Length: 66
Image 1 (cartoon, rainbow, N blue to C red):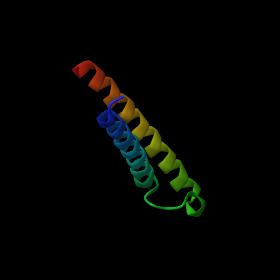
Image 2 (cartoon, helix red, strand yellow):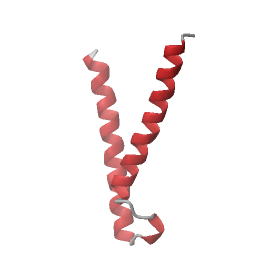
Image 3 (cartoon, rainbow, N blue to C red):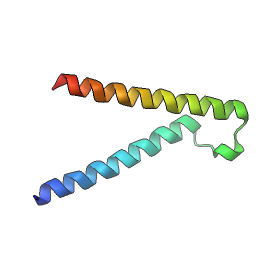
């Protein structure tokens, strides 16, 4: 395996983890779920579901754009 491929794979893995963490932080607005009210928790859950749907849609769009 090429060294360049290994580096790219590692960078993509780290980027994916960072992006997912950022989406989770945006959904919870940086609050700890233990400190949130039930309404805030429901809103955060809804935001995470919306983000996941957007990710799936983007993956499908990338597949069709090839």
